[in-house]
Image 1 (cartoon, rainbow, N blue to C red):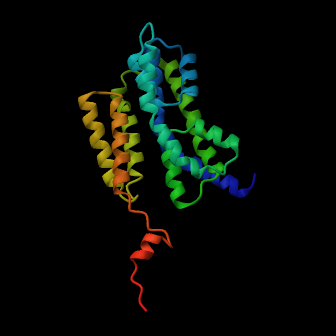
Image 2 (spheres, one colour; image 1 turned 135 degrees about the vertical axis):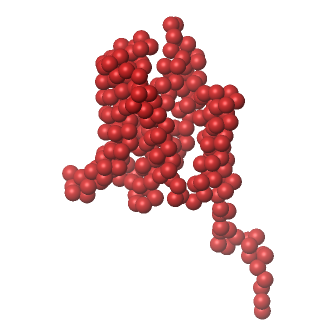
Image 3 (cartoon, rainbow, N blue to C red; image 1 turned 180 degrees about the horizontal axis):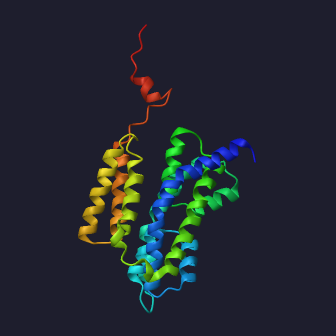
Length: 245
């Protein structure tokens, strides 16, 4: 392993550290809520390892019953996780040169937090496999570890509202959104997405606000995108140019 590879891996770990720490109370909270719904700690660990999607996992707990409403669970989690299609599409060209195994692992542990950090990094320099793995894999390990610990601790954690842990998930996403504030037209896109999500949540509830916010943000980005310059040698452009003798 070269010095550059180690430096990139350390940079990835350094960048993911704040979201990693912020995810600790969220993981503990999910684990405690999951065992309260009747899941075994081993099932919590397996869900976190295979699903690895905090929003979808919390949505499942809201729907959990006996028997499990499989159709409702699949529909709700599908809507919530549909944003990963857009996230993966935006990240694909930036990791196209990675080894196939690294791409497979990296996309498997992609989450909102490491996706946002990867996009921010890509604006400054090309992404490297070492940076991506050094950032993404520890975040996955952290989520599995602390959701499992939360499940094992169970009722010992008490009411999460006492320490503000119920707001940690929201605060983490606010921080991620703030990281894009310097991007061109980011303010308008964020405002459109937030307004649409809030209206959808008030009108029809979860999980439609996720799809509505994402769709409105995409629409705003497309409408506000600058027009592409005309290609050199465009016949239409040439015909419109005045020819002087």
